[in-house]
Image (cartoon, rainbow, N blue to C red; front, side, top):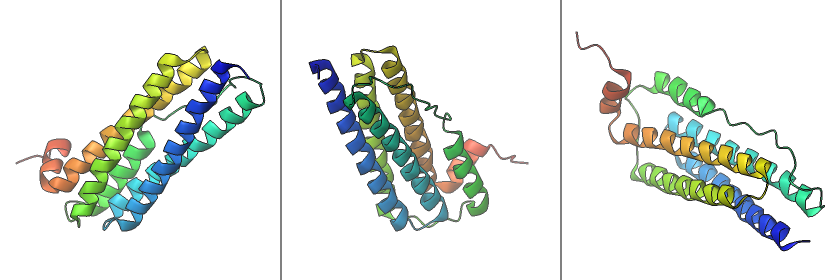
Length: 174
């Protein structure tokens, strides 16, 4: 195995562990959430981390067996699924939501994790030796950025649900 392949495998191992840790964190945070919105959003994020992990494992196995970087059929949805979960659940919850400090802390921790993951994928993208690898990491980085934006929205909602609705939903003040 070349030094370049080993470097790629090492990066994939880090990415796999990041996704495992992310899924575990989101699953625990969802279980601890005191509201339906938090549970659904965090469980959806846990599911996305699991999807990433499975893709990374497939890539790792392909490279390890010396088949090279495989064609990867991974196309993030631009956050549409997460935004749909967020919107649908908001429609049911409105501004009556239970929020504990631990939930706010979990969202801040999650945003920090997403930022670190985004930065890692951007570095992997810059170090990529194949176009398919570069494109893959670019798509992943984009999805992690979208996760962070949705978490920022959720954080604002947790801090001030009524203010969030005024800002985001632009209700008529007639």
